[in-house]
Length: 304
Ligand code: GYE
Image (cartoon, rainbow, N blue to C red; front, side, top):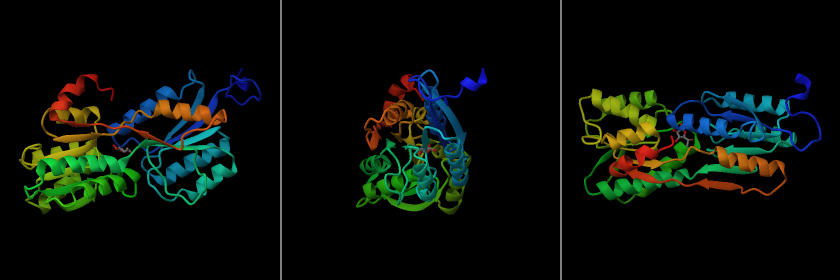
């Protein structure tokens, strides 16, 4: 009987909570693990009805997905904003429709007051700092030249990781000689690294804002006849399986973790919000870091 389904009926305490989720895209191993975590926890079994869409790293796609969910009258909106700015109009529309918004993974910069109930995700500045501190500890005094593979231009993790890394190597003799976006993809990392290798013959270190770009850089370095992890050191962020494998294999030198398993926190925040209970405005996910030895030890138990 189709009329009874969809959680629209009034009354009754056992209705599903409808959630519209707009995901950034499918750009990386991190994103795949994050999507799986959300789809595994925001389930009917757990009391939710999930509408999920992939914006293919385009803000306009995210805005139209959010507008569709508002028009459908979902109970809660959640999204991982591809870039930081440009959300004010759609956040106003959600507010006017009385639909609470939860941010996962990435932050927004907005003028809208009380634009969202909670932001769940890692501290990206700290991740960049952890990467930079390790580089400073290992390599200060060598006069090393660093190239940086940035994440998506305008995204919170690209802005914050760049800032954190730069501040941590300040006062050392490590020098960033080039920095360009590889859009958080393996292919982007490979292409930008090919360009770096053509333009500079003195690269000692790559700092990539995620594992996938670091893995692309490995391909470019090997194609140029050099040994990644030795001739050119590599530091990345995420600690997904493929990255951890390359670290254990000696091709990457250090990885700062970024935990993608945000589904359980998201489920809790949504339930509390719908129940009218207070929620934490900022939920910071804890991240570790791994050197090659730690990666060998951690690999067998990694969940993503
Ligand atoms: O590090 C990268 C992904 O926003 C934290 O996005 C996320 C980043 C993650 O594409 O791999």
